[in-house]
Length: 219
View 1 (cartoon, rainbow, N blue to C red):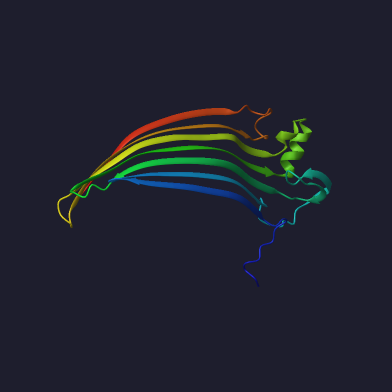
View 2 (spheres, helix red, strand yellow; view 1 turned 120 degrees about the vertical axis):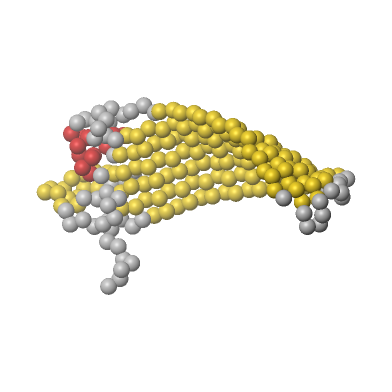
């Protein structure tokens, strides 16, 4: 008996496309070094599985035609269900740093950081009982399956930071640092639960921002 073998109506699938890029620039002038780090990511993922994770023995009394996923329509007396998660997004980050090497007891690092990210995602469930029920009630096709739709989610953040170092000896150094961070997030989303919502609900929008000072003292 193979305990790793699972009975399911459909095989799971997972696809991902990812692009990563980084550009680092460093320039030394005198006792100082300027550094720049630019990064970009872009990606898409999709995961599809059998929603009930089994091959159910249940049969309808007669064959019915329904959607088993976003691309497939079947006519069968079997109960076939699937769910799907999709997401895509891109992110830019930029950091600048200035570092000192003064050759004495005192040195410092100061810098700035920025992040800009936006993406979208969706989670969907196809189940014939939902579709048959909604079709009987003359609901639009978008209401024939359950979905959580987030077509827009963004993050904008920036920070300023700095550290100073004082060497008492080769074995002992005092570090004092501070960072200020400001971040703003926004989202546009909705849940389509057709059993309980007779009409397609509008999107809900939300936005929130934070700012925070943090510090560090180490010896």
